[in-house]
Length: 321
Image 1 (cartoon, rainbow, N blue to C red):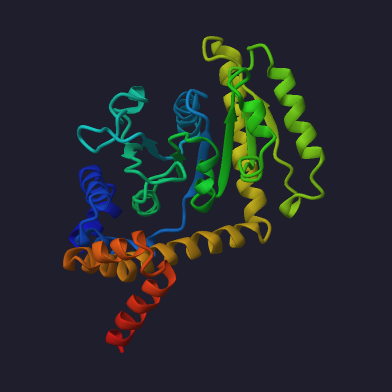
Image 2: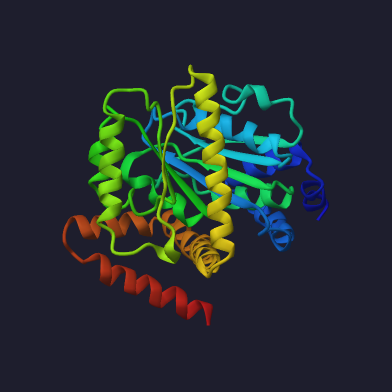
């Protein structure tokens, strides 16, 4: 309970330690989450996704500045590749966005993917709750950038920004489903490059093919100049910041926000059930050696996955009654 109070007071050290414990999957971390959960649900969660090298971190850094100029507190969860040596994030919050390190109203934390697909680590959803309970007005979740699989951010964010760059194959991504469907705002970054206008036209053409847009929100396409053109870059980031706010107002003024909260809640329930039901069963099977026996049976075609799963489910469900 004391940890929960410290987090609500904005204690950075306690929050950092709790996120680390969640990444390490320590059971006591869940207990603290139970205490802070009633104080969550107030922040605007913004997801930023796109290919590696698209400039997501540069945009995140600039958006922090924009939000802070409006006196809003900001939390950032940046998901990075996992270090093969330490198991932690290869990049780190001390490397990126250093100019905000001394701002007490900004909290930045890097998380490693730890093998998770979808561009996010498993701890991200819980870490969002921690930053929310700390009272951050805006929480930015930046994905690792893993291509078509990074659509999972839509399950955690109210507003999803898809960042694309001309000349990096993003034109092909436009032609695919998934990444197009999750965007609430498109950003063509480094728009001074050759091919930017072609990419813009391609996105608009894809949007024109849509029969309708949920709640009537047509994703805008914002072209952001190179960061080395500071004046135009700042203007475009400010335009992006305003669009983010406009989208959230659109959500709150319609049923869309409720729909997104429900989708997030369903994901959280599924993950919690997996943690408390499936994983203990898997751990028990592995510890007893039964899991290896099952693998042997399947390898030699002495059974099938469905029969074995049925047998395990029947036994454990019977034991639970």
